[in-house]
Image (cartoon, rainbow, N blue to C red):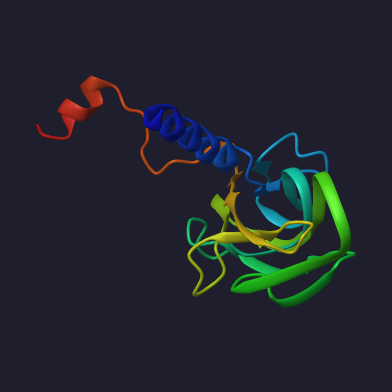
Length: 169
């Protein structure tokens, strides 16, 4: 009996983590690509996906993997408080579901990768559900200039065994 209860609780915890909202930067409003072109852009779109109900979010744009890039502003129809590169809060005014376009970034991109990360002094990206509970969300990455990072950027790059051995010759 105790084992069954413990397994049920673990399954519910995993299911709730898998259902978390995901906030990422995409190349267009449909969220079909995570590749951005270098240079001045007004089309990089921040989208909150997989939402079963949200009234807002809190996060920031991290450009540390694309040094020299500048994000000027987030153009959005929603109410915002803060600065997009340090701590921005967005409120929708009503419960939204599915994919919610948070806005477009006005930026000058240099090659690399850009990410949605927790706001400064916060441990998690946050979204507020429809009963106003603050919950953790996941963040995504976009590749600038086709460096191959794409949506699933990872600092670890695939290498052949020969190239690894060549490092030590």
